[in-house]
Length: 290
Ligand code: ZN
Image 1: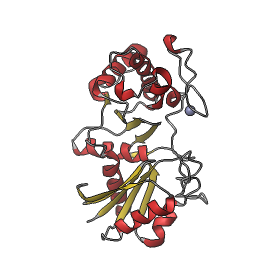
Image 2: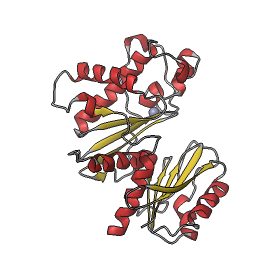
Image 3: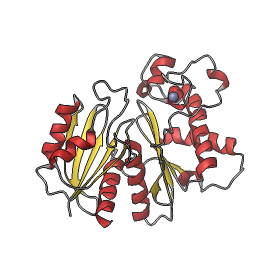
């Protein structure tokens, strides 16, 4: 069986074909330019392989409601030139196989969920956050992706401000000091004038970030009670998550029972940003079972 995966990002697309055990057989990276140029290369790649189904995990916002007239579109994205792009329609024109269309973080969440099951972890639910250029999250509950009016937007809840950070206005164009506005990668430039990759973990700015990310963990813990919360994206490291676990434990104050924090708040189990590819393969395979 050959399955397809499209991981569509703002700077690059990763297309892959793999087998039913989610092993990648071939893949290609395509620079994200115009929709026409980029999607044509996606189509050309998949035309070379007899794929039976394709999973697509895209940057957004996207329309995931199957009954909506713009189902399969990238909608009002800030990405220049990509507003109102009929992503799924473009692929369907030339490739006649079932396709599952979802967000990049849902794809990653599903990949991490499937990997947990394959590792014989006893879990039903999982939340995946990415903290990079933007912040987003996806959730699996009872093995299903959540969100029927649209996909979750977990990057934008409002938070209690850190006492040493009250003068920072936040950079989200919609809400200023929401989670994304306070912890996304570009907040390093805005706060300390250098990229996060150059800010040592001893810098107090990391304590501020940890305080906010721990609040996100607290909220999602209280609202969904997931089995596991995975953090991916360029801002995240094991050392940073250590701070987050410690802040979260203080905030939760043993209010509810959670798994051992080293197993509860974790980095992706799938290496090299491969979570979405595995998720896409699994979501594509599900389409063939139905
Ligand atoms: Zn926001």
